[in-house]
Figure 1: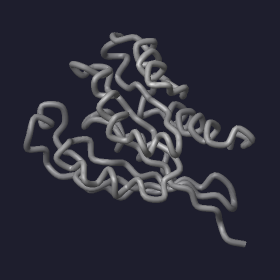
Figure 2: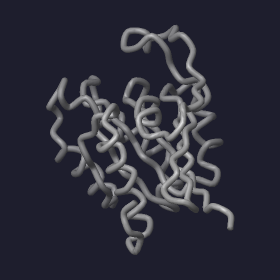
Figure 3: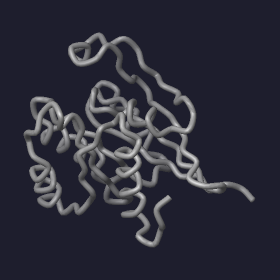
Figure 4: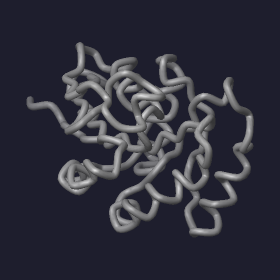
Amino acid sequence: MSADHYKVLFTGPAGAGKTTAIRTISDHLPMMTDVAATDETRDRKPSTTVAMDYGVIRLGRDEVVHLYGTPGQDRFDFMWEILQEGALGLLVLVDNARPDPVGDLTRFLDAYDAFIAATGVAVGITRTDVSAHPPRQDYVDLLARRGLRCPVFSVDARDPRDVSLLLQSLLYCLDPEASPA
């Protein structure tokens, strides 16, 4: 009997925690395409993803979830469309300590608008321990104005329980009949 394979896409601005989240829940050491940051990103972190991150989770004997992380910088946005192919949903991570995190979420919702309409989305707000503003409700309000009802959680990308809950919430939204892993 062959395994069922699913693909989930992580996206968001540089430094939001995509690489960390994938590394946190992947069953094996993920493949990463990080290089030294040479633009404004270097002020936030020493390296940045230029193509993708890739990890795998085995949900059961016959189910595998492939985790793909996009680059966060606009100059690598050509990868965003490429990585959408075959994905069943989108996890957007937003760094609450950035200057305009709600604007960041808007940018990624715009970039993935058609993909989200065809699949689903869940939002993880990272670094709320560093900055509690804006509050979670600001994100929920933005999503509501766009006609999106989706999970929105504060997430520590280093905590397997947080990342797993975000992923499970997306999977449940895509298939409400599914039971949690």
